[in-house]
Image 1 (cartoon, rainbow, N blue to C red):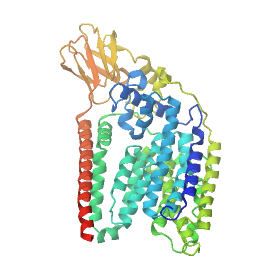
Image 2: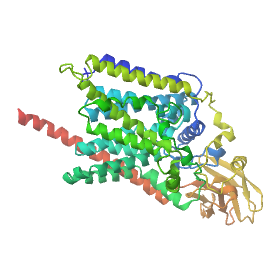
Image 3: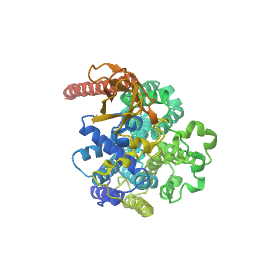
Image 4: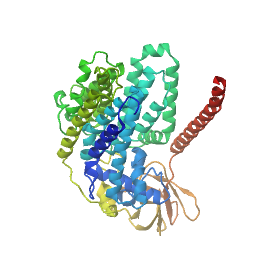
Length: 553
């Protein structure tokens, strides 16, 4: 028997059934569809190209726009995308590698939610119910199979860790800051917008726990240290982003009308695309009749409902669009609403099973407990199957050389992170292997990994525009003298312009910026410091354990 009394066979049956249902569309040879899937497949293929070139952590991905480059990995964190990228490196096809990636994310999400809910509830029964609801709730299913929103469906894996961290902070004296650290770092390295929502959730928890902080002020100090560690371990990402935003002018014109995209309040439980669905709200009903409610369950339920309202027109999106325009779509809030309501419902239903009057039988092993678990699973399965049937995206088979066709390397959706000067995408593709001098003469171009060399530059040339989209951090040298050459982003259509200074050839590569290198060093130092601390802590425990046992004897 597990902790909490749940039967192993029932646990295995529910777990396998739920995971199978969530992964059903993946059992095909063709690739699932999704609004953003072409871009995410391109990101994966770009990471694969970088890995195979010995450059696994490029910020400017060389595959985009036929080699012109795009700052995808600088602005979009790639943490879990390395899974399918490595599968591609080892020869797994595009379709299968993406499907395996989705399956791994679903399994990781289920495991993360179960582990965190178990910590909160101290019950496998409550944890399993929470994981079932979390895995199959409507917005999560549509995120994967309709939107193809890799950022959100990877970030949601870490949201249960954030919730468990908030619980630990509010009710357990913040004895396990690792939950909040891993949760916030993971979310930030998967999807920045979800990280912003989680950060606001943490701030709300601090405000709600002011009385507890007064009684235990050391909690706040530990929280600040945890926040600094999160910023430290992720510095390689956010420092580069902030620098680029402060120094560049990009095409990130978020012209989405957030007020228009907001749902009506009564539409939130609709069983349709980008809504929460009825099932997850139906399962809140037991919380209305339970006599002794769990405080944290109430907090999760209220928070989930409030955040749901933020996705509707009741929230002043029209007035705040200048500040919150980066959200693009108000229903992004549902990525956090689902986990919060799942935690609330797991705790409520566990409490209902505890009150089922079965004479002290452990929660999860009694008849009513089993019926509740089976009933919850059935409700969520019906909801998930219905949602999967309503997915409008078609399957498509991507060949392994799909992105060898240059136009497909321009699949960057809105192109938010192209410099505004690079306004003509077709022109970028058309000149991806051409460099031009100030006199309009074409210079020969050779590419090697993420570098290029322009040769046979005529004498008297003042500058040459090379086929790289300009981002701060590019460098150029004369390959013969290795002397540095001045460059700018003034090239035609936002390309890199090299001032030749009499050189007959130029070598151009992305060197990175000083701040990017500082961020990388800070992240590495933070990681090493954490590992050293954990090793020392483990060694101390191993030393203290025998002495404690000897004293007891």
